[in-house]
Amino acid sequence: MTSSVAFPTIKPTSRRYNPGTYPSTTFESLDGTKTHLRYGNKRVNATLTLGFSNISDADAALILSNYENVNSDWNYVSFGSTNATAGVDSTSLSAFLEESGSGLLWRYSGPPNVTSVFPGQSNVSCSFVACLDSP
Image (tube, rainbow, N blue to C red; front, top):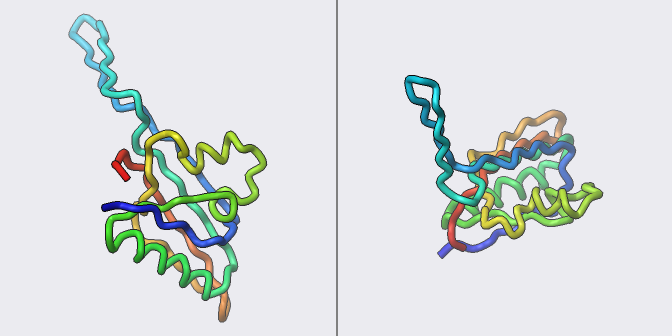
């Protein structure tokens, strides 16, 4: 059974969000006539990338531990105002970043990338993809 695992309370220094698309296909005949089929009313393949610059190695370890906790049981990541959306002024933008009410659940799309920049400090990049799964 999947469950929510809260992302650590570390404020990102950068974030990149793509809301995804609606699954659809366009068919074009030889005379140029196009037919567009849409397969659902939910977005798919939303992506979120969070960057953390010059954080402590302890915070980097928290992110790696979160990755392990989420993927060991096929859980999903939950975000809130103390982590991924920290610093976002608009509550409507925060709702998109958290995917609240959309039916999409955030999962890691790959392992976090950790770069040591100074003794005791690291840069971390995490990428997520939103999936339509039942919690």
